[in-house]
Length: 295
Image (cartoon, rainbow, N blue to C red; front, side):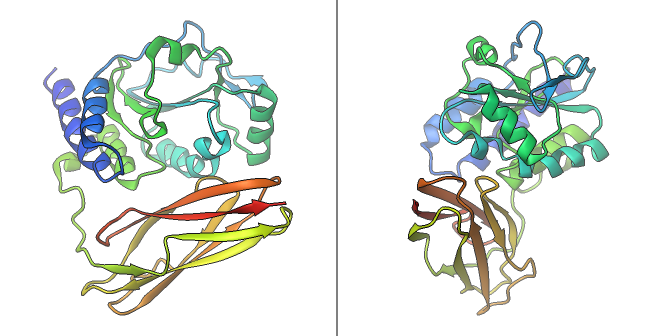
């Protein structure tokens, strides 16, 4: 009982400090984290999990697990960006190797089942998902509308012990793994790396108008203006249409890091994408934006 109470309290403190880095109202963040920590999640009576939205996986939801990661995705906005299949794949494989007693539950409320089936097949995402066409789980729980608050770490009794998306924030990922594996590093300093400062060439880049079938390339430059090495921990892209290339070696003071971005439009229309850079520089994470019109 003591451990069951302590973990939610610790995760509440850490989650609040992690989300405080975001451009959100601090009081709202505190209220959301406080409201959901140790809240019991209600599930539909018979959720059906399938592979590629076709083949039913029997017994997946019923697995006896010490922890579950629940992620809810609704039909608002770019559903492919919200799902981030390419980022979930390595994280799930990591869980299989290090935390086999943890299950990942995807509940997707799509506008079109065919679109989800197409996305799952195209991305080769063969992990079980629940296509919740009636939005049943959201109706039972009334999840926050902010996507960063629609992923939860649950204990054996389906109570929330942490909140946040581990594939969009390396510190949330570390928090989840520490809780699941029982490591004692829950109380360690959130970020013990020696900080530095950087000068960014630009925060946003407008590609302009281009043929949607042609790949586009842009480059962002980080100059280390501080006294310590500059280290990029993770760079997250919104979906598979955007990829990045950069050196993972520390950049010495005065040095420069180039982040090369490749964008491949999937159809014509205006786009606005955000790339998030987590690093040891003051102001991290940095949000880089690319936009344009694909014809």
